[in-house]
Length: 293
Image 1 (cartoon, rainbow, N blue to C red):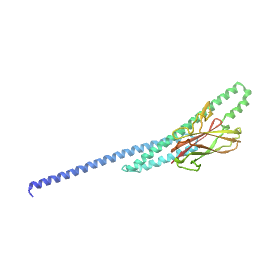
Image 2: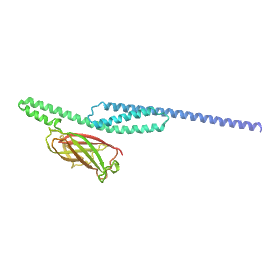
Image 3: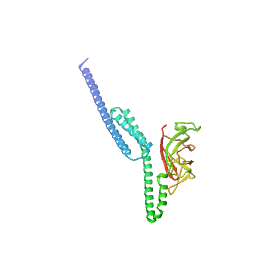
């Protein structure tokens, strides 16, 4: 082999080696940048989980006055803590796991929106009742000041309109039925909702026939079964209802059942629903329930 060919081969070998070294360094730099980017993404996701945990702490400190909703909040709060701990223990290079935790975060946020809506609804109801009680007390005081002879009648009227005489539905169990009235948990097969409720004992409430009105709200805040013909008196006007069930109330605890048939073509979806019960123009019970699959 002459020297000229030899040096050509040497130069080619050096060029190949140099190219490989350059490619290797380039790949290493890209990998380093990718790991740094994933670490930043993990830290941002961790901050979002921590912010969500703080929000749950804030709602837990509120006086919600609804045991079912309080339990749901507690479970979701624990779920956020578990996911946060799982994220902390996940390596930044585990892209698949971080993607799963990001998806879980979106799910929890969606559920929390339903909770916030229910909490706002309960707060609005409590504020309304508080305002009504203040109004009743003011009117009661004025009547007493105008004529002391009406004191005994005024006391009787006050006792009639206070919450002590209002009925209360203390529990409600929801059963989902298919078109054959058989139990089903598959949302695609649900055609009817069965509600088994209990009206608490209340000897201060006048006995007799009562009309139990129910309003069923879906996760989007839409009233199921809304119709111009289905209205009942509430406060100073009329509002629509989903179903009405007459009962004969004697003052003792009453166990009742009512049914709601889904509108033709309506497909019930996943998420949190709410049923609100009204008797004698008063909100007497509010219960959230969840459709899972």
